[in-house]
Length: 295
Image (cartoon, rainbow, N blue to C red; front, side):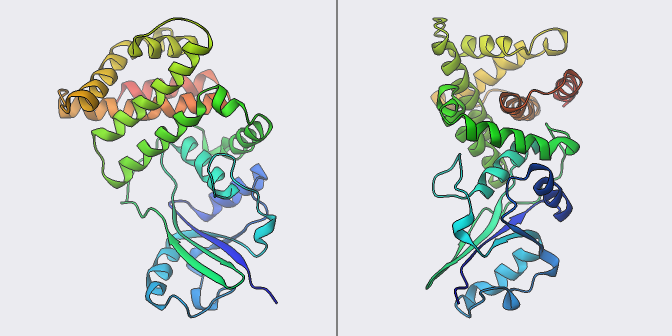
């Protein structure tokens, strides 16, 4: 009898949250959820004494994880966004977007026939904070609507600039977790610059200056009015950091202002991507604008 399986060890999330997201989104019901604190690796499905040198680390990671497992790998849908990945990658990607904080897979285990392997993911430092773009009560619906939209509109990913812009965004999130630096802010800028460039070119607007392209894109997306008045100065600083970092290898903003601008571009880029997939109400957007101003 075959004992094939695929198993992900997902960090930085409560079991109840992932369970609720699974129920409300309906996007990964083929996966069984296992509470890491109740998981015994040596008694787990398909266990073989193959990776003795890795068992202690895997057991330790399991205790701080929610584990998703399928014993029917062929039933799992492929990722929409990522090559050589499953639909769990899309769920975690949308979760990272909604929470404005990268949700990583700490480890990955797969047994297909005689091939049994363990892969290691990102094991980030502990980060405290809550910067949700999508309210907790809406995350399941957001993931459902976002992934359904992407499934039904595959050409939109490139036509809108979502890909590759979102890849830059993801790298910015990872950069913060692994080594907080000015690099994160630069990557976020490239992300929004890519979206803006696609938008400007597709509408034949003839704007060539990169900063002005971003400003036009942001204004046309509806981020205008008194609550967003602060963005003009902020965008100037974002562009200055990008130009100094990538072209001159320098950093001229003070440490305090740089920290503020980094948090602001993180929150704003999350909001832009979220609203490309699900429009948020004005109260939620105004709350994020206020949070950005108060950093």
